Image 1 (tube, one colour):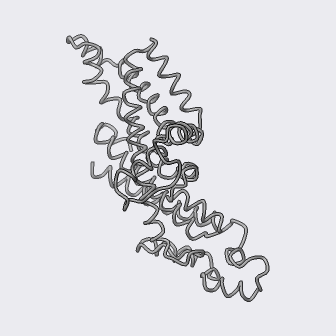
Image 2 (tube, rainbow, N blue to C red):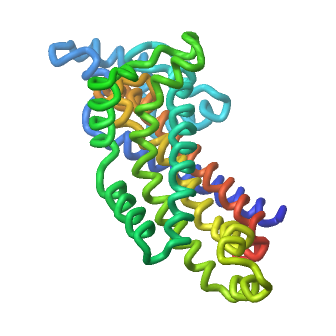
Image 3 (cartoon, rainbow, N blue to C red):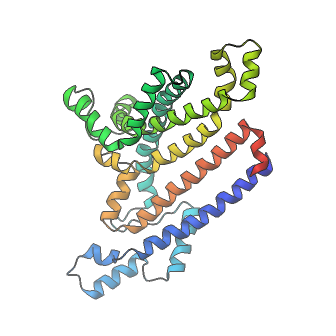
Length: 315
């Protein structure tokens, strides 16, 4: 297990290095000068040059890349061009919205998907299975921002149970903050729950056709008992993979939802920084999200290697 973890850790490190180079290169080739953008079209060339010097944009690309990477390793993400504040502080303020939102959405997605997938697999070919699959097909097809607008119309504008926009902050109390995140979390969770339910059903159906399931039935277990005691655990390996990918997506992919609900999270920070050409913020936040995705995938690899020891020798 230790050798397996070390191999995956080396792969993680190489992935981070490649990702940092790609992110920096993409940001570099984006047309436009941040200094000229900040000063406006009528700015004098010497003023633009002075600002470029102040922002550190006159150094060579390799030097700026090394400074950026070594800074991140020590927790220094640089200083925002627009707000003149440390990027690390801006990220720290926003992550306390995006991270709980992703966790909340993942919990809702799991609570919806697991029972739905198991229910559909246990009733294969019957009305319950067909109904669940029809609902999941709708969930996969409909984008989450459309779900967001629908639930805002119903639960906020019509019923008045939730506020449509904004976040009061954790200082206002746990329940007011959770209440403000509920509609965004539901909007994020529904499409992911549809995907996870389909994966759960498919994986369970594969397990139900395995020899060990027939042996369990031959020993006197009912179909329900064999399903819960043997099939569900063995069906968890692909489901764990999807769960890990979903968390990474929910954390990194909430830009539209945060815009719809005006949540001060990382997604909205990226959107605002792109508009302001605050490239140091964009590349730092994107790198943080990539790091999260890679680390979550590493954790998933370790988790399903622990569930199925046979996988340790295949990687």
